[in-house]
Length: 110
Image (cartoon, rainbow, N blue to C red):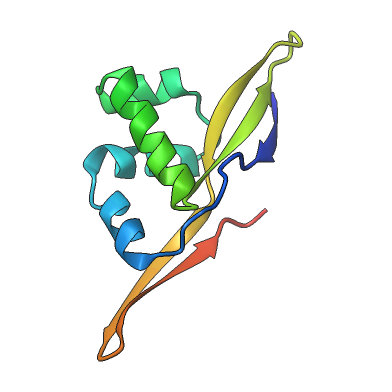
């Protein structure tokens, strides 16, 4: 099995409020944890979260738009391929001071 990462979102956001809102959702956090161990399909994520496929796709879209997840193509040994998702961050740091809230994301090692 091999993967090729692509990020199909139009304009990822770096708005810390939106990123924190996305991370505040338990289903989104479960998806992020699952995909940090390697690419997962939406079906695999649906099974992992015990959520409906519609909910999982909404959370995937939120994570993609927040630049916390990337879409990739997973190639199987039989030549077939499927869309999968993988975490793009390994570390999230939140700093709160008089200027506001800042969220710093550290990318996954490649």
